[in-house]
Image (cartoon, rainbow, N blue to C red):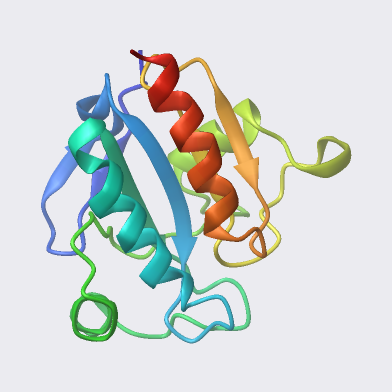
Length: 161
C-alpha cells in the first residue's frame, strides 16, 4: 500500500499518494526551462499509451536546479498544456532535496537510492517507477530516454496479465 502523503495539484486540489493504490506510477520532478524539458512530449505519449492499463504520470515542478522552474502555478500549468499538451497530473512546485524536501521524495529516495546509494536528486527529470503492487521501485537518471522507461512499462504491464 502506498503511504498517506498529501499532494497538492497545480490547481490547488489536495489528494493523497494513497489515492493511487493499484496504479503503476511514473513520478518525475520537472522544470520548464531545462534542457530535458522536451521529455514532457515523451512522458505525455507514455501516459496516452499506458493510462488505460493503469499508468499515472505524476509531475512535480521543482526550482532547485539552476532556477529552471521560476513560474507560479498558473504559468507552469499554461506552459505544460500549451507547449506540450500535457494531460497527466501536474502538482504544485515542491523541493525534492533539503530541509523543505517534500515527503513523497523522502519516500521515493529511501525506496530507490541512486548510484552508490546516494539519495540526493541530482537534477530535473529524475524519474521513478512504482508498480501497481508498490513492490518495484526503480529510479532513472534525468538523461535516461523515455524509450528506456517504455521498455520497463511494457514488461510491468505484460507481467500483470
